[in-house]
Structures are given as structure tokens and as C-alpha cells.
View 1 (cartoon, helix red, strand yellow):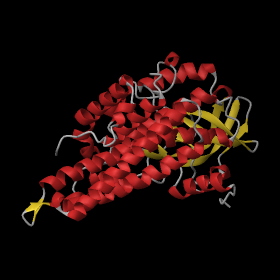
View 2 (cartoon, helix red, strand yellow):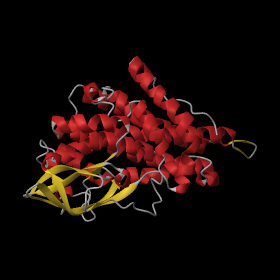
View 3 (cartoon, one colour):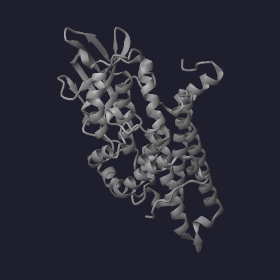
View 4 (cartoon, helix red, strand yellow):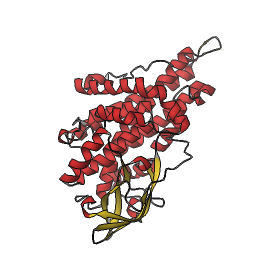
Length: 389
């Protein structure tokens, strides 16, 4: 296996600050030295590498764009995106863990929680001492979260929760779940703590994708939730969708890392693989594939940088995040498949990361809004006509 070579054909690094470069390189070094040497083993065994949680916490990778008063790194959103990029260069499951912890658990507690909830949970989640998950998707309601059947009812001590969620990253290992349920017909957010009677989180088995990630069901059977565990400022479905927007932003950056890993592998392989007495990198069709890969990565890098700058200025529209998520996931999956073609039969071996990334990206393209749903989000924005129904 060849060492990773940075991919920056348009000198985009010149547009980054010294701090952004330092953060990217710190995470890049962590991924190269610690994650990549062992991730294939975890993927093969379908296990999540718990050993990295505390290290990622020490590096300040969880909730990295949240305020320092909660023991978070308080980085800008470009730096946060670069963190996601480098983590997914290692594996989508590692980035998914960090994305959920940051964008889907810490963000809603920060944005919609009480000061007591923030002070209690955010430092613990930032350090990795506690793990969180996000419960929105249900067995019968994926792209239509507003149709959810999970219900909360008022009780003498707070609320009683009944229902189920599915495809929940970190669910089985989480200490706290941010769960969305209808209370008097209105979608509200609740903090459901591990060990609460009636709350179970069985792990989903048999995945061919995201194998080094914990995916779970959440089951609520008359779960008693105290009054202080409702997120007071989460009063509508749009608040849950705001959380998804945070996660989609991280995904848009993350998949570039997977694409870069596949391109780098394919380029090095093509230079060294000899057929018909010369390296396959000298063949026109192989060069066309490599140029396609480099071009798409470069376009996505520029797209993400502007996305991050807009977010830091408070000018970001959710439709712009949809465009980046949609484009970059499609781009990364095509690059993974093209890299597999260049590697030929060797492309299916876990000696190389390509097939693992390709399988993972099949899930990443689907979660936090499918390709089709993001198409319709953008379509409505540019035409004024909603096509969801």
C-alpha cells in the first residue's frame, strides 16, 4: 500500500487559514497512523473500533464547531468540514460516529436544550465519555419523517413514550438518545437515557455496508421520561430537520475523503500495474478515468469550501447543503466504482480500501436524505413547485 498523497489540483490549500490547515493535518495524521492500519479488520469483523472514541475526544473532534464554554473546540465550519473529510478518508463509519455525536446529538442539545441540559451533556459528549444517537427515522417513515407514529403523552411525572425508530447510528452503544415524537400532534424532541425502563436498542445485523459502525433499532414501550428531559426549544418538525442539515453538511465534506482515498489508491495502482509490457496508467482509457476522478474531487472541494464560508457568515441556505450532499455523494460513489474498475479483480480485496468505501457510500448516498429527495428539495427551490406529493 502506498502512502497517502494530498489531492489538491487547484491549490485550494492557499484559500485555507493556517489554523484550518493545522487541524486538517492533525486529523489526517491520526487517520493515517491509527485508523487506516486497523480499519479493515474491524470492517471484516463487523465491529466498531471503540478504541478511537476517547482519542477523537482528546483531539476535540466532537462538536468541534460548538462554543468553548461547553468544552468544545469552537472551530469554524470549514475546519469542522475538513475534520469530517479526513475521518471519512479512514472510513464512513468513523465519520458517521463523529457526525452523529456532533451534528445530531450535541447540536440539538445546544440549539434546543435548556442551559442545564447543555451544561450536563455537552462536555461529556465532547470528551467522548458519553455517546449519543439521534432517533427520527422509523420503520415505515424514512423520507417522510412527518408521518412518524412514535407518540409521547403527558403523565404525572413528565411523559410516556411509545414507538420505534430504525437505522439509528450508535443506538446500541448510546448513553443518551435524542428522540423525536409527536406530543399532542406536534413533533417534539426528548432526551432518553440508557437504562430507562422500557427503552431497548437492539443492534441490526447482516449489513454489507457500514460494517465498522453500530446501527440499531430503538424501541420504546411505555418509557417514562421526566419533564426535564424534553428539549424546551424544539417545538416543530423543522427543528429535527435543522439537525439533519448539520449532518448533511458533514456528509458533503466527508465523502470527499472517501473519494480521495479511492483516487489515490487507483492512481498508485495504475502506475505500478503492468499489462502488455507497460503500466496501465499509460493507457488512454485509464487516464480518462483518473482525470474524471480528479476533476470531480476538485469540483467538490471548491463547492464545499464555499459552502463552509457561507455557513460561517450565516448566509447558508439548506437547499445549498442539499445540492452539496447530493452532488458529492453521487461523485464519491462513482469514483469508488471507477477505482474498482482500475484495480480489476484486486479491487474486491480488502488489501485495498476501494470496495469497503464503495459499499459504505451506498449507505451514505441514502441516509440523511436520499439522492431523489435532495433533487426534489432543490427542484422546488428553483421552480417554486413542490413535487413531493
